[in-house]
Image 1: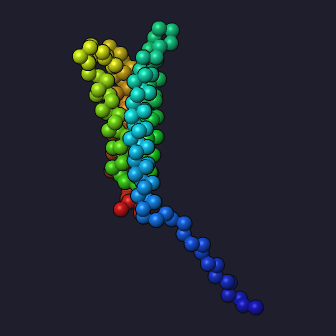
Image 2: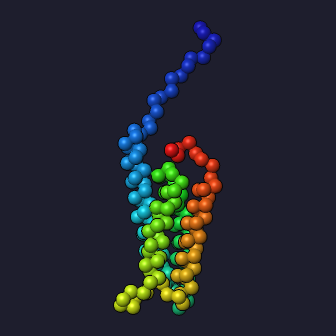
Image 3: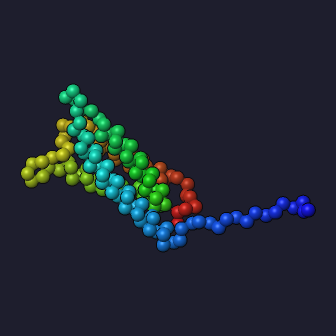
Length: 144
């Protein structure tokens, strides 16, 4: 009988190959972009929600929560610091388009709708803070 403990062999690592890793990162990036667009549409729909004839700020809360969640997801899925731009870009484009009057006179976010204006400010600040946090975060071993 030996007093030296037997060495256990470590199971082989089940890390995906480089092609699968790239495919998963691209898929995560696409999901982040689609999520940013869907978040913007949902927030625009909720900007006019009223209770008892008064506007409520539910879209502001959705803008903050979705911005945080989508920024986190994009960073984790893509594995790069710049990934916070993926959900932010379609969101900003939708907000810009919604605030410009069409040739027919339609306007999704008007200047007298405090919820729409607060939603734009809150969403923009959320994406800015999440991006700034990525700049200040220490590098991880996953980034390449």
